[in-house]
Image (cartoon, rainbow, N blue to C red; front, side, top):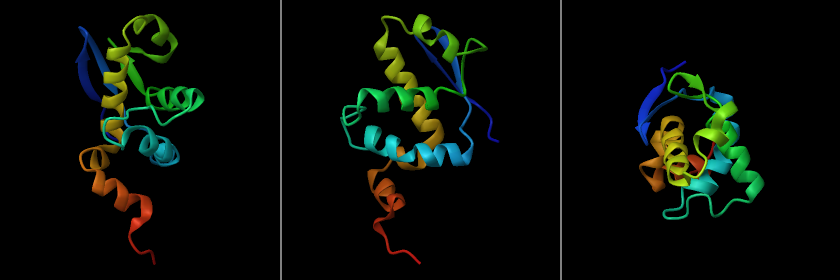
Length: 115
């Protein structure tokens, strides 16, 4: 398992440990739909899909050393820009090879020939 990546958002230190491979793979369709179209972060997803994606991406996150999800509503209350920043960070931690280049995400999604 890879080490957690850290960032500071709004004066709080967050760490995100990459998801296990099969969980990340299972989440990939929602990530691709929600983040891989430039300028459309999450607008292509239903409310239920957004919540599922956020819960999964942040399931391995910590804030100031404590597990984030139990206190997410309190920590992020009224600060949606910080939440969006953290979600983008979690996507980058888990899918960095795809987030930098939309052509790579198209190739990974199977646009090339298969065996």
